[in-house]
Length: 414
Image 1 (cartoon, one colour):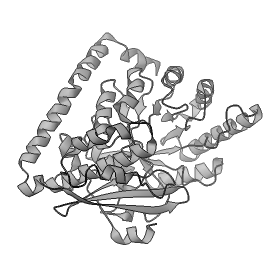
Image 2 (image 1 turned 90 degrees about the vertical axis):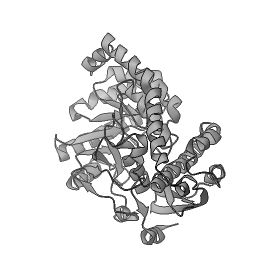
Image 3 (image 1 turned 90 degrees about the horizontal axis):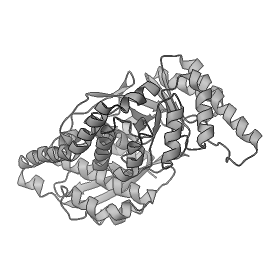
Protein backbone atom coordinates (compact mmCIF):
# COMPACT_ATOMS: atom_id res chain seq x y z
CA UNK A 1 0.00 0.00 0.00
CA UNK A 2 2.78 2.45 0.95
CA UNK A 3 4.72 1.64 -2.20
CA UNK A 4 1.68 2.32 -4.38
CA UNK A 5 1.02 5.65 -2.75
CA UNK A 6 4.65 6.72 -3.18
CA UNK A 7 4.42 6.00 -6.89
CA UNK A 8 1.17 7.91 -7.17
CA UNK A 9 2.90 11.00 -5.77
CA UNK A 10 5.67 10.92 -8.38
CA UNK A 11 6.10 13.93 -10.74
CA UNK A 12 5.59 11.65 -13.75
CA UNK A 13 2.19 10.54 -12.52
CA UNK A 14 1.23 14.08 -11.53
CA UNK A 15 1.91 15.11 -15.15
CA UNK A 16 -0.10 12.16 -16.44
CA UNK A 17 -2.94 12.94 -14.05
CA UNK A 18 -3.14 16.55 -15.20
CA UNK A 19 -3.13 15.40 -18.80
CA UNK A 20 -6.03 13.02 -18.16
CA UNK A 21 -7.96 15.68 -16.24
CA UNK A 22 -7.52 18.12 -19.10
CA UNK A 23 -8.77 15.56 -21.61
CA UNK A 24 -11.87 14.34 -19.73
CA UNK A 25 -14.01 16.99 -21.42
CA UNK A 26 -12.45 16.20 -24.79
CA UNK A 27 -13.21 12.50 -24.27
CA UNK A 28 -16.82 13.31 -23.42
CA UNK A 29 -17.00 15.45 -26.56
CA UNK A 30 -15.66 12.60 -28.68
CA UNK A 31 -18.21 10.23 -27.17
CA UNK A 32 -20.99 12.64 -28.05
CA UNK A 33 -19.61 12.90 -31.61
CA UNK A 34 -19.85 9.12 -31.95
CA UNK A 35 -23.35 9.33 -30.51
CA UNK A 36 -24.18 11.91 -33.18
CA UNK A 37 -22.97 9.50 -35.84
CA UNK A 38 -25.35 6.86 -34.48
CA UNK A 39 -28.21 9.38 -34.57
CA UNK A 40 -27.42 10.19 -38.18
CA UNK A 41 -28.09 6.56 -39.11
CA UNK A 42 -31.49 6.51 -37.39
CA UNK A 43 -34.74 6.82 -39.29
CA UNK A 44 -36.92 9.89 -38.88
CA UNK A 45 -39.38 7.79 -36.87
CA UNK A 46 -36.60 6.81 -34.46
CA UNK A 47 -35.38 10.37 -34.06
CA UNK A 48 -38.90 11.64 -33.41
CA UNK A 49 -39.82 9.11 -30.72
CA UNK A 50 -41.65 10.73 -27.80
CA UNK A 51 -42.25 9.50 -24.25
CA UNK A 52 -45.86 8.33 -23.98
CA UNK A 53 -46.20 6.36 -20.73
CA UNK A 54 -44.57 5.29 -17.49
CA UNK A 55 -45.24 2.08 -15.56
CA UNK A 56 -43.91 1.44 -12.07
CA UNK A 57 -43.75 -2.13 -10.76
CA UNK A 58 -42.76 -3.12 -7.24
CA UNK A 59 -41.46 -6.65 -6.80
CA UNK A 60 -41.53 -8.25 -3.33
CA UNK A 61 -38.21 -9.97 -2.66
CA UNK A 62 -37.64 -10.43 1.10
CA UNK A 63 -38.65 -8.67 4.30
CA UNK A 64 -35.56 -6.48 3.74
CA UNK A 65 -35.84 -5.89 0.01
CA UNK A 66 -38.26 -4.69 -2.64
CA UNK A 67 -37.33 -3.89 -6.23
CA UNK A 68 -38.97 -0.83 -7.77
CA UNK A 69 -38.82 -1.05 -11.56
CA UNK A 70 -39.65 1.75 -13.99
CA UNK A 71 -40.66 1.24 -17.61
CA UNK A 72 -41.04 4.08 -20.09
CA UNK A 73 -42.85 3.57 -23.41
CA UNK A 74 -42.06 5.59 -26.52
CA UNK A 75 -44.34 6.60 -29.37
CA UNK A 76 -42.62 3.91 -31.45
CA UNK A 77 -43.87 1.24 -29.03
CA UNK A 78 -40.37 0.53 -27.71
CA UNK A 79 -39.81 0.50 -23.95
CA UNK A 80 -36.87 1.34 -21.71
CA UNK A 81 -36.37 0.20 -18.14
CA UNK A 82 -34.68 1.48 -15.01
CA UNK A 83 -34.54 0.56 -11.34
CA UNK A 84 -35.35 2.74 -8.31
CA UNK A 85 -35.01 0.19 -5.52
CA UNK A 86 -34.40 1.69 -2.10
CA UNK A 87 -34.30 -0.97 0.59
CA UNK A 88 -37.71 -1.88 1.98
CA UNK A 89 -39.62 0.91 0.21
CA UNK A 90 -42.58 -0.43 -1.73
CA UNK A 91 -43.41 2.77 -3.61
CA UNK A 92 -41.67 5.88 -4.86
CA UNK A 93 -44.21 8.58 -5.64
CA UNK A 94 -41.37 10.97 -6.39
CA UNK A 95 -40.99 9.23 -9.75
CA UNK A 96 -44.06 11.11 -10.95
CA UNK A 97 -42.53 14.56 -10.63
CA UNK A 98 -39.54 13.51 -12.72
CA UNK A 99 -41.72 11.70 -15.25
CA UNK A 100 -43.58 14.96 -15.88
CA UNK A 101 -40.27 16.42 -17.06
CA UNK A 102 -40.04 13.88 -19.90
CA UNK A 103 -43.68 13.14 -20.75
CA UNK A 104 -44.28 14.06 -24.39
CA UNK A 105 -40.62 14.95 -24.87
CA UNK A 106 -38.10 13.32 -27.18
CA UNK A 107 -36.61 10.12 -25.78
CA UNK A 108 -33.27 11.45 -27.04
CA UNK A 109 -33.42 14.66 -24.99
CA UNK A 110 -31.66 13.17 -21.97
CA UNK A 111 -29.41 16.15 -21.33
CA UNK A 112 -32.50 18.36 -21.32
CA UNK A 113 -34.06 16.11 -18.67
CA UNK A 114 -30.90 16.15 -16.61
CA UNK A 115 -30.83 19.94 -16.69
CA UNK A 116 -34.48 20.21 -15.70
CA UNK A 117 -34.25 17.75 -12.82
CA UNK A 118 -30.74 18.32 -11.51
CA UNK A 119 -31.54 20.95 -8.88
CA UNK A 120 -34.11 18.71 -7.20
CA UNK A 121 -32.07 15.54 -7.59
CA UNK A 122 -28.91 17.07 -6.14
CA UNK A 123 -30.57 18.69 -3.11
CA UNK A 124 -29.40 15.94 -0.75
CA UNK A 125 -32.58 13.84 -0.58
CA UNK A 126 -31.68 10.23 -1.48
CA UNK A 127 -35.26 9.44 -2.50
CA UNK A 128 -35.27 12.27 -5.05
CA UNK A 129 -31.83 11.27 -6.30
CA UNK A 130 -33.05 7.70 -6.80
CA UNK A 131 -36.23 8.70 -8.62
CA UNK A 132 -34.30 11.03 -10.91
CA UNK A 133 -31.71 8.35 -11.65
CA UNK A 134 -34.31 5.69 -12.49
CA UNK A 135 -35.99 7.84 -15.14
CA UNK A 136 -32.58 8.65 -16.61
CA UNK A 137 -31.69 4.95 -16.76
CA UNK A 138 -34.92 4.15 -18.59
CA UNK A 139 -34.38 6.97 -21.09
CA UNK A 140 -30.97 5.63 -22.10
CA UNK A 141 -32.35 2.11 -22.52
CA UNK A 142 -35.23 3.41 -24.63
CA UNK A 143 -32.90 5.49 -26.77
CA UNK A 144 -30.45 2.65 -27.38
CA UNK A 145 -33.22 0.19 -28.15
CA UNK A 146 -34.79 2.66 -30.59
CA UNK A 147 -31.44 2.91 -32.36
CA UNK A 148 -30.93 -0.87 -32.21
CA UNK A 149 -27.55 -0.66 -30.42
CA UNK A 150 -26.24 -1.75 -27.02
CA UNK A 151 -26.00 1.08 -24.50
CA UNK A 152 -22.22 0.90 -24.36
CA UNK A 153 -22.04 1.83 -28.06
CA UNK A 154 -23.43 5.23 -27.10
CA UNK A 155 -20.35 5.68 -24.89
CA UNK A 156 -17.80 4.88 -27.57
CA UNK A 157 -17.94 1.10 -27.62
CA UNK A 158 -17.24 -2.07 -25.66
CA UNK A 159 -13.98 -2.62 -23.78
CA UNK A 160 -14.90 -5.79 -21.85
CA UNK A 161 -16.75 -8.88 -23.12
CA UNK A 162 -17.34 -10.31 -19.65
CA UNK A 163 -17.14 -8.79 -16.19
CA UNK A 164 -15.97 -10.25 -12.88
CA UNK A 165 -18.70 -10.17 -10.24
CA UNK A 166 -18.61 -10.58 -6.48
CA UNK A 167 -21.43 -12.13 -4.48
CA UNK A 168 -22.80 -9.93 -1.71
CA UNK A 169 -23.98 -12.56 0.78
CA UNK A 170 -25.02 -10.13 3.49
CA UNK A 171 -28.80 -9.93 3.08
CA UNK A 172 -29.08 -13.67 2.54
CA UNK A 173 -27.27 -14.34 5.84
CA UNK A 174 -29.91 -14.53 8.57
CA UNK A 175 -27.64 -16.35 11.02
CA UNK A 176 -25.38 -13.41 11.87
CA UNK A 177 -22.77 -15.46 13.68
CA UNK A 178 -19.51 -16.90 12.33
CA UNK A 179 -21.16 -20.15 11.19
CA UNK A 180 -23.90 -18.33 9.27
CA UNK A 181 -21.46 -16.15 7.35
CA UNK A 182 -19.09 -19.06 6.73
CA UNK A 183 -21.88 -21.27 5.41
CA UNK A 184 -23.14 -18.68 2.92
CA UNK A 185 -19.62 -17.81 1.84
CA UNK A 186 -19.09 -21.48 1.04
CA UNK A 187 -22.39 -21.68 -0.85
CA UNK A 188 -21.57 -18.62 -2.96
CA UNK A 189 -18.20 -20.13 -3.85
CA UNK A 190 -19.98 -23.37 -4.79
CA UNK A 191 -22.09 -21.25 -7.17
CA UNK A 192 -18.90 -20.26 -8.95
CA UNK A 193 -18.11 -16.88 -7.40
CA UNK A 194 -14.47 -16.14 -6.74
CA UNK A 195 -15.15 -13.06 -4.62
CA UNK A 196 -17.65 -12.42 -1.84
CA UNK A 197 -18.70 -9.52 0.37
CA UNK A 198 -20.36 -9.37 3.78
CA UNK A 199 -21.13 -6.80 6.47
CA UNK A 200 -20.54 -8.70 9.74
CA UNK A 201 -20.47 -5.48 11.77
CA UNK A 202 -24.11 -4.62 11.00
CA UNK A 203 -25.96 -3.80 14.20
CA UNK A 204 -22.81 -2.36 15.75
CA UNK A 205 -23.68 -0.36 18.90
CA UNK A 206 -23.46 3.42 18.99
CA UNK A 207 -19.93 4.55 19.75
CA UNK A 208 -21.02 6.10 23.05
CA UNK A 209 -22.32 2.71 24.24
CA UNK A 210 -20.62 0.91 27.15
CA UNK A 211 -17.12 -0.25 26.28
CA UNK A 212 -17.97 -3.90 26.85
CA UNK A 213 -20.79 -3.75 24.26
CA UNK A 214 -18.51 -2.21 21.67
CA UNK A 215 -15.79 -4.76 22.37
CA UNK A 216 -18.21 -7.68 22.09
CA UNK A 217 -19.56 -6.43 18.74
CA UNK A 218 -16.05 -5.82 17.49
CA UNK A 219 -14.91 -9.32 18.41
CA UNK A 220 -18.00 -10.92 16.88
CA UNK A 221 -17.49 -9.15 13.55
CA UNK A 222 -13.83 -10.11 13.44
CA UNK A 223 -14.67 -13.74 14.26
CA UNK A 224 -17.14 -13.78 11.37
CA UNK A 225 -14.48 -12.58 8.94
CA UNK A 226 -11.98 -15.22 10.00
CA UNK A 227 -14.69 -17.89 9.88
CA UNK A 228 -15.34 -17.03 6.24
CA UNK A 229 -11.65 -17.05 5.42
CA UNK A 230 -11.15 -20.43 7.05
CA UNK A 231 -14.14 -21.91 5.22
CA UNK A 232 -13.38 -20.68 1.68
CA UNK A 233 -9.59 -20.79 1.77
CA UNK A 234 -6.99 -18.32 0.63
CA UNK A 235 -7.88 -18.16 -3.08
CA UNK A 236 -11.26 -16.44 -2.65
CA UNK A 237 -11.42 -12.65 -2.37
CA UNK A 238 -13.26 -11.45 0.74
CA UNK A 239 -14.57 -7.90 0.93
CA UNK A 240 -15.89 -6.38 4.15
CA UNK A 241 -18.39 -3.51 4.33
CA UNK A 242 -18.38 -1.74 7.71
CA UNK A 243 -21.38 0.46 6.79
CA UNK A 244 -19.82 3.53 8.47
CA UNK A 245 -20.26 2.19 12.02
CA UNK A 246 -16.77 3.16 13.20
CA UNK A 247 -14.80 6.28 13.97
CA UNK A 248 -11.29 6.87 12.68
CA UNK A 249 -9.38 5.16 15.48
CA UNK A 250 -11.67 2.15 15.61
CA UNK A 251 -11.50 1.81 11.82
CA UNK A 252 -7.72 1.61 11.95
CA UNK A 253 -7.69 -0.78 14.91
CA UNK A 254 -10.18 -3.19 13.30
CA UNK A 255 -8.25 -3.10 10.01
CA UNK A 256 -5.09 -4.08 11.91
CA UNK A 257 -6.88 -7.05 13.50
CA UNK A 258 -8.10 -8.14 10.06
CA UNK A 259 -4.73 -8.03 8.32
CA UNK A 260 -4.22 -11.79 8.56
CA UNK A 261 -7.60 -12.31 6.84
CA UNK A 262 -6.06 -10.83 3.68
CA UNK A 263 -9.11 -8.79 2.70
CA UNK A 264 -9.74 -7.86 -0.91
CA UNK A 265 -11.03 -4.53 0.35
CA UNK A 266 -12.28 -2.68 3.43
CA UNK A 267 -15.38 -0.61 2.67
CA UNK A 268 -16.68 2.55 4.32
CA UNK A 269 -15.59 2.15 7.95
CA UNK A 270 -16.67 5.80 8.26
CA UNK A 271 -19.09 7.76 6.09
CA UNK A 272 -17.49 8.68 2.74
CA UNK A 273 -18.52 12.30 3.28
CA UNK A 274 -15.89 12.38 6.05
CA UNK A 275 -13.13 12.94 3.54
CA UNK A 276 -10.35 13.85 5.98
CA UNK A 277 -11.10 10.90 8.25
CA UNK A 278 -11.33 8.57 5.27
CA UNK A 279 -7.96 9.82 4.03
CA UNK A 280 -6.43 9.28 7.47
CA UNK A 281 -7.71 5.71 7.53
CA UNK A 282 -6.58 5.08 3.96
CA UNK A 283 -3.03 6.17 4.73
CA UNK A 284 -2.86 4.17 7.99
CA UNK A 285 -4.04 0.73 6.86
CA UNK A 286 -2.67 -1.97 4.59
CA UNK A 287 -5.99 -2.91 2.97
CA UNK A 288 -7.50 -1.47 -0.20
CA UNK A 289 -10.14 1.09 0.83
CA UNK A 290 -13.44 1.40 -1.05
CA UNK A 291 -16.46 3.66 -0.68
CA UNK A 292 -19.00 6.10 -2.06
CA UNK A 293 -22.11 3.97 -2.52
CA UNK A 294 -24.68 6.71 -1.82
CA UNK A 295 -22.79 9.77 -3.04
CA UNK A 296 -24.44 11.85 -5.76
CA UNK A 297 -22.88 13.38 -8.83
CA UNK A 298 -19.30 14.15 -9.67
CA UNK A 299 -19.32 16.80 -6.95
CA UNK A 300 -20.15 14.16 -4.37
CA UNK A 301 -17.21 12.00 -5.47
CA UNK A 302 -14.73 14.78 -6.16
CA UNK A 303 -13.40 15.16 -2.58
CA UNK A 304 -12.57 11.45 -2.29
CA UNK A 305 -10.85 11.49 -5.66
CA UNK A 306 -8.95 14.76 -5.24
CA UNK A 307 -7.69 13.71 -1.80
CA UNK A 308 -7.01 10.16 -3.03
CA UNK A 309 -8.81 9.03 0.10
CA UNK A 310 -9.95 5.72 -1.42
CA UNK A 311 -8.53 3.20 -3.87
CA UNK A 312 -11.91 2.23 -5.34
CA UNK A 313 -15.07 4.30 -5.73
CA UNK A 314 -18.54 2.77 -5.85
CA UNK A 315 -21.11 4.85 -7.75
CA UNK A 316 -24.58 3.31 -7.89
CA UNK A 317 -26.57 3.97 -11.08
CA UNK A 318 -29.74 4.01 -8.94
CA UNK A 319 -28.54 6.83 -6.69
CA UNK A 320 -25.58 8.69 -8.22
CA UNK A 321 -27.49 10.59 -10.92
CA UNK A 322 -27.94 7.84 -13.48
CA UNK A 323 -25.92 6.39 -16.31
CA UNK A 324 -24.38 9.54 -17.75
CA UNK A 325 -23.35 10.78 -14.32
CA UNK A 326 -21.76 7.40 -13.60
CA UNK A 327 -19.70 7.83 -16.77
CA UNK A 328 -18.55 11.27 -15.61
CA UNK A 329 -17.74 9.99 -12.12
CA UNK A 330 -15.70 7.16 -13.61
CA UNK A 331 -13.78 9.58 -15.82
CA UNK A 332 -13.04 11.74 -12.76
CA UNK A 333 -11.77 8.68 -10.88
CA UNK A 334 -9.64 7.60 -13.82
CA UNK A 335 -7.83 10.94 -13.75
CA UNK A 336 -6.63 10.01 -10.24
CA UNK A 337 -5.87 6.36 -11.09
CA UNK A 338 -8.81 5.21 -8.96
CA UNK A 339 -10.73 2.09 -9.94
CA UNK A 340 -14.53 1.90 -10.25
CA UNK A 341 -16.64 -0.88 -8.77
CA UNK A 342 -20.34 0.04 -9.02
CA UNK A 343 -22.42 -0.47 -5.90
CA UNK A 344 -25.24 -2.83 -6.90
CA UNK A 345 -27.04 -4.71 -4.09
CA UNK A 346 -30.02 -4.57 -6.39
CA UNK A 347 -32.34 -6.35 -8.76
CA UNK A 348 -31.60 -7.68 -12.24
CA UNK A 349 -32.54 -4.41 -13.98
CA UNK A 350 -29.90 -2.41 -12.13
CA UNK A 351 -27.46 -5.26 -12.72
CA UNK A 352 -28.10 -5.24 -16.48
CA UNK A 353 -27.72 -1.45 -16.62
CA UNK A 354 -24.51 -1.65 -14.60
CA UNK A 355 -23.11 -4.36 -16.86
CA UNK A 356 -23.85 -2.23 -19.94
CA UNK A 357 -22.10 0.70 -18.27
CA UNK A 358 -19.06 -1.22 -17.03
CA UNK A 359 -18.50 -2.72 -20.48
CA UNK A 360 -17.27 0.72 -21.60
CA UNK A 361 -15.27 1.78 -18.52
CA UNK A 362 -11.46 1.61 -18.82
CA UNK A 363 -11.00 1.70 -15.03
CA UNK A 364 -13.63 -0.92 -14.17
CA UNK A 365 -12.67 -3.30 -11.35
CA UNK A 366 -15.52 -5.66 -10.34
CA UNK A 367 -19.34 -5.54 -10.13
CA UNK A 368 -21.51 -6.31 -7.11
CA UNK A 369 -24.30 -8.93 -7.25
CA UNK A 370 -26.95 -9.44 -4.59
CA UNK A 371 -26.66 -13.17 -4.01
CA UNK A 372 -29.06 -15.67 -2.48
CA UNK A 373 -32.25 -13.68 -1.90
CA UNK A 374 -34.62 -15.54 -4.25
CA UNK A 375 -34.29 -18.54 -6.55
CA UNK A 376 -36.57 -16.92 -9.16
CA UNK A 377 -34.43 -13.78 -9.47
CA UNK A 378 -32.62 -14.84 -12.65
CA UNK A 379 -35.90 -15.54 -14.46
CA UNK A 380 -37.37 -12.04 -13.88
CA UNK A 381 -35.62 -10.89 -17.05
CA UNK A 382 -35.41 -12.26 -20.57
CA UNK A 383 -32.85 -13.53 -21.26
CA UNK A 384 -32.23 -14.81 -17.75
CA UNK A 385 -29.29 -13.62 -15.68
CA UNK A 386 -26.42 -16.07 -16.07
CA UNK A 387 -23.04 -16.24 -14.35
CA UNK A 388 -20.11 -18.45 -15.24
CA UNK A 389 -17.03 -18.79 -13.07
CA UNK A 390 -17.97 -15.67 -11.17
CA UNK A 391 -18.40 -13.52 -14.28
CA UNK A 392 -21.31 -12.20 -16.31
CA UNK A 393 -21.20 -11.87 -20.09
CA UNK A 394 -21.82 -8.47 -21.65
CA UNK A 395 -24.93 -8.60 -23.85
CA UNK A 396 -24.80 -7.52 -27.49
CA UNK A 397 -28.56 -6.88 -27.53
CA UNK A 398 -29.92 -3.33 -27.87
CA UNK A 399 -30.10 -1.14 -24.78
CA UNK A 400 -29.28 -2.99 -21.58
CA UNK A 401 -30.03 -6.26 -23.33
CA UNK A 402 -33.03 -7.37 -21.27
CA UNK A 403 -36.82 -7.27 -21.06
CA UNK A 404 -39.04 -8.09 -18.09
CA UNK A 405 -40.59 -11.54 -17.91
CA UNK A 406 -44.25 -10.59 -17.48
CA UNK A 407 -45.24 -13.93 -15.93
CA UNK A 408 -42.58 -13.76 -13.20
CA UNK A 409 -43.26 -10.06 -12.68
CA UNK A 410 -46.96 -10.70 -12.16
CA UNK A 411 -46.26 -13.56 -9.74
CA UNK A 412 -44.18 -11.37 -7.43
CA UNK A 413 -45.59 -7.91 -7.93
CA UNK A 414 -46.89 -6.04 -4.87
